[in-house]
Length: 460
Image 1 (cartoon, rainbow, N blue to C red):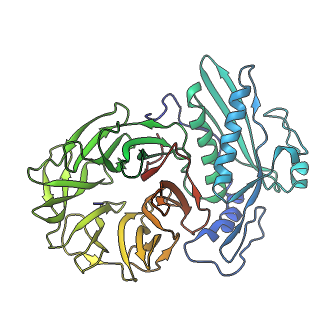
Image 2: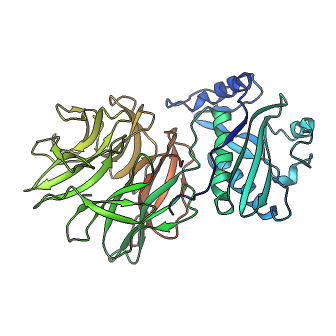
Image 3: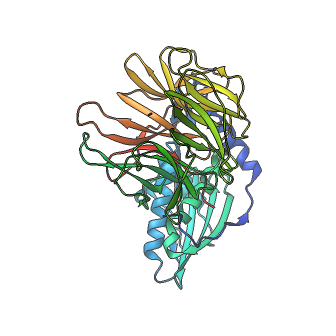
């Protein structure tokens, strides 16, 4: 067997619509992020251009001048928000920030004319400008994204919230810019729940923690008095399912993130329950139940507690994950003799095997876009995070190490986070992320060892 979201933030008020004429060439340029490997340089003649050769992207140069402080006490917030926007965009690997020391032009006012020629001179292809005001404990941010070479505004927004929510606002600014340029869905304004670890490897303590996707705003949801495993966010991001050993054997618990209070689910005498995951509508939980030495998949209605069995084989069926439309479930089973991946109707029935490569497959997770399944693969003494189409075709391995496992999808289906453990007796587990193209592998900052990440949907 294997803080709550910050409150007080308004929904963005759109100031300018996205200019379709500008987006078309941008989207063409970023179509290179398709799943299939790229073997030749790809480019287009539009105003924004990204080059990729043999799977390597030439990041788009962009500039984010320091946001203007429009009130006397907004200087720090302006600096902090600028830094987070820059970090979000650059961290994707798709963008290259032109540092302030190279800027020729200066932004003197939010509505002042933009000297596009000066930004062209330093090869900035995209420009983000902004202004911040702070009053009565609230912060307001205005920003605009420009296509420098056409001199046209692509998107503009105004956002507001409590002063404490400045980081969320910064993520929303970056999300809007990212989506306008790439055509991809947003994901910066999201959180990750994971197992935070402490102590020696032989006596490792574990507790649930939640943080922003980039490691900020860490909050603990449980203490370290018992082992916890496999946390999973609800589709609305307000609840978490996980496996706990607080009664001495594995049981599923449901916790309210804001209240940090929980209750047991799927409590059937003489059984062990684990590996839970929400249905897309958040009304049901699919999980593994072990009884009498046999492990099968079950599904339970959260409101009524009514449960039904989905599989009945001598093998071990576990790690279930719903398709985004709720019609199917992917899971791992050793019914063929080794761990492999199978798909079956959400109500049970005949399962179809989809993994046929060498090695063992486990922990499958359906992409929120519905087109891919991420998984863990063990082959030839190495562990990998991989993706395949839902019919098992086009399998690609994105990572390889001593131990990589437990993938989870960003809300836009573009990035995968997972656990990587280093080799040796003192090896520690850490969180990493990688683009589905296999590029931009990086470690996610956590206070100490960490494992079992699960990405939330976008925050409301």
